[in-house]
Image 1 (spheres, rainbow, N blue to C red):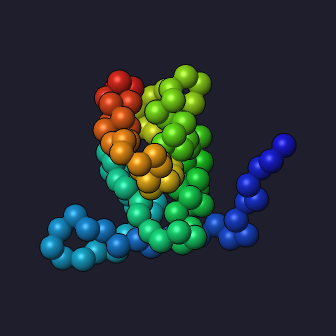
Image 2 (tube, rainbow, N blue to C red):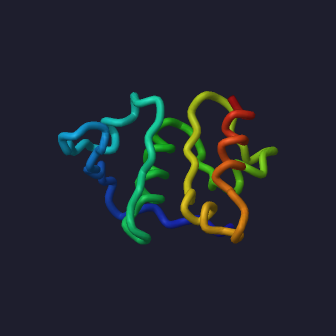
Image 3 (cartoon, rainbow, N blue to C red):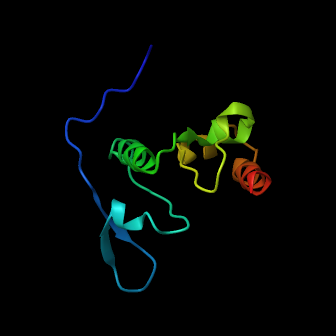
Length: 110
């Protein structure tokens, strides 16, 4: 079985928020009551690890954007979903608006 190793430290990361003209910083756990948010960052900055931690705190298994769009057993049930690897999905095949496909899948899932 190929599992990702657990992080060596359980860190509640600070993240800048861009929801107003005044820059603010929050702990990622402070955003748990938000209806939605997007976690952006450079490759290797720990987004997936932080995202996995938040999904575990919610008792939900995260999925990649590719898995979510493919539907079936990969599409989680319920009102909360953690979709990882959006940038990898978006930059996939040239000439196809893959973001529109993801939006359709989100609308279909409710």
